[in-house]
Amino acid sequence: MSKTRTLAIDFTQEDSLLRVYPRIPLLSSKNLSWQGIHLGYYCQPPHETPQYEPRQYLISIHLSQPVTMQQCWQDGLSTKESQRYGDISIYPTARSLQEAWDVECEFLEIYLKPTLFLQAAYESIDLERLEILPQPNIRDPLIQQIGLSLKAKLESTVGDRSGMNGMGSRLLAESASALLAVHLIEQYSAQKPVFRDYTGGLPKHKLQVAIDYIQAHLSEDISLEALAHVVGMSMHHFARLFKQSSGYSPYQYVIQCRIERAKMLLLQRQLSIAEVAFAVGFGSQSHLTQYFKRFVGITPKQFLNQ
Image (cartoon, rainbow, N blue to C red):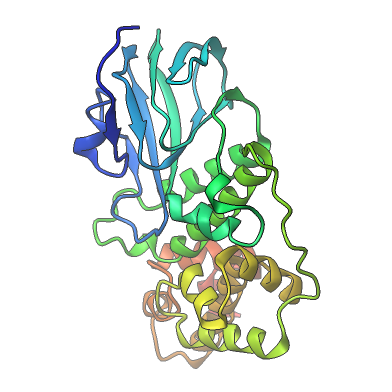
């Protein structure tokens, strides 16, 4: 690999990432309201990158034929390995590298805002010593599952110029970002953290505050950050305690509430199915139908006919 000056790359900006990759992503979350996390799905030809330093924590998931990947890091770490479907590389910020691969390949990249790690590590680790170590080629089923789930959610928004089909994805994406930040700190940091063991769930009054907020904002794009804020907690701790209290993740609970509200509105027979979908926070009638059938077992139209 040739030596070049180091480029600071913001992978959430297409003009910036084109300084590293020859092609823009086939899919991107740039038009969605996701906070702290960004997703890009790529198909790139054989290529050698310049030396670059990512401004976000970067997780790359290989999703195509085997490819010989060479990675050279600033601290002397150098690898040349065959990457297979599902292999993962983790790139921390403030550490430059250069890469090269020999055949066209497809991969999914998750970009995490550095402040996510500060929030997740606040009560468990000395922030000045927080360091995620490079992971050139690993297997991590949890990261792969989260990445593919986010890719599927992103694919469901393709072709929707209004962005309405992306409503509801924000809570899922932000929940995933909080989980990924904690997972990377637990598994791949130089200093092993000791996370405080929160048990017993949310205090009843805080649980009620969260539920009241959800019910009052069902028609909106609810964020995990907003839910955590109203109860005065970090996103990670809120998500963990909410699930202990309710039996559901915040995302699952919001979907359940939207379905129940949709059933009530359908029975009133004052709104069309499409109008009900928008009234409860789904981006389209097909989006409502998808989740309604999953949770109720029948479509909204069949529900009305019964």
